[in-house]
Length: 157
Figure 1 (cartoon, rainbow, N blue to C red):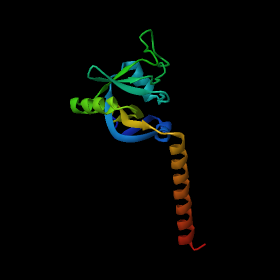
Figure 2: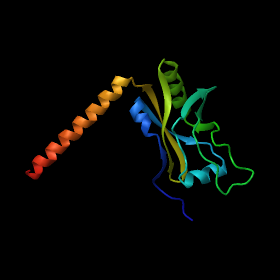
Figure 3: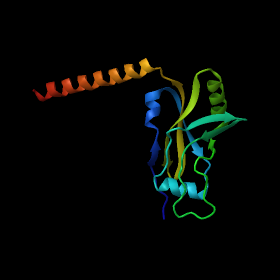
Figure 4: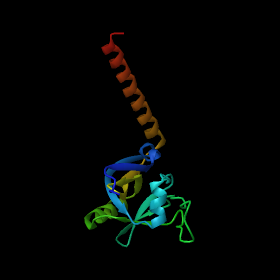
């Protein structure tokens, strides 16, 4: 069977864009076991509480929930185990420097399959304050209202 091409989305962290100011984004490979891949291919994963850390020159995805494979045996994986991320050395050192600054963290945005390989999109992020969240919601609503007004004007209403 040929390997699927393109990007097949498995899970997204929608709250990350709401809760954080996102800076640089990276695409990283995931080191997974067989049952984890099968569970991801079934579309089952959650990034709700997940984050990434840099430890001893390696990047680790922590607290990401990939449920046990339904048809797995005694070799099934732990659901919230730490998973290693595959990045280039320069990217790892840049992540390490950025997170050394106070208030910055590495947040996973999405897990997906790219040309058959499991990937995770991560971003360097700074937490938003409550007023920042309200400001971005108000800005988004204003943009929607402007687009609606333009659309109705173009329709001649």
